[in-house]
Image (cartoon, rainbow, N blue to C red; front, side, top):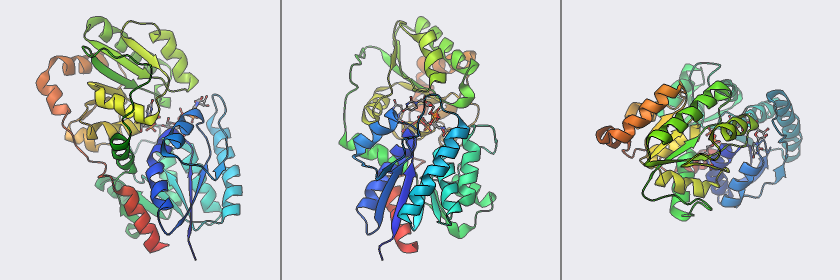
Length: 366
Ligand code: UD1
Ligand code: UDP
């Protein structure tokens, strides 16, 4: 009998990284059923539109400035109904969001095996990133299939007592999504007139640990850098979380050579990454994509669960202190040799075939 694979995701990064897998499932001998929790709404729909994914279930749970308790209970209760209706042979979840954790728990309660895509990432610090580190530990604990992107994530799973025979090194599906998108969609960024004579600095930030003072420090560093360097302009697609949007617009709106824009549709964001000179980010996904595009990344966090590119030297942990951001950006602007070292193109996270490997494993094992 045809095996049923129920894929559950809810936020922008999960959607980007699950999209190539959903496409691969649709073209396989397995039956693919997609459920979105819509933990994110607008920025999830951007991805569904781009990849032409029509969910079979849309739980539509997002509320303005939602909290972790209500989010967790909504995902748990609503996915229960979907799992009971679909009766899947496996539930697939991705990464470390509240949707991933609660959907994996829901499958576990229903005694349906779950497969964790992007398993094994760790900082081994339970509050950093918060709540993502515990979300992924938890998701790994209840899952039966662990699709680990790198050797390090495989080692982390072994350290976490996951049986070796449940671990599969597949690469990260983010590289499948990135390579497909840069090859097939070359969309320009709508409504943004970049000056070709200036160096573009791309900034994204949304982490809960950075709410409050750290976000304000980032904004102050950006203001000082643009005041001092007349040859740069900064583009910041601002995350819709009000804890981000409010301070960012208060501190950076209407400043010369600083463009605050709405979140970009993924293909346009890829175009912008390719055009950028330097990328500043606290995003997990951007840390994985930018090295493939040969772009230096300064990470606005003190620790990362993605150490591979840091070890290669194309990503640097800068943190959120204003002085450190200013000195690391200035060094890249002033020192060509350092810039060149950090802009080497590398692919530690995948080769573009992760989704295919995952589907082959599912066909063999289910
Ligand atoms: C969530 C994830 C985080 C992930 C990030 C990716 C959790 C706890 N957090 O954080 O791990 O890195 O997504 O972006 O799972 N909003 C909108 N429209 C949208 C999306 C969000 O208005 O399309 C606003 C809403 O007010 C919402 C708020 O942002 O309540 C926060 O969304 P939420 O998913 O709870 O947290 P994120 O900070 O987005
Ligand atoms: N991204 C996007 N549009 C934007 C900003 C980011 O499509 O305006 C993409 C980015 O390329 C990456 C993903 O969104 O694939 C990262 O999402 P986010 O930073 O929200 O979450 P994280 O990866 O930190 O969980």
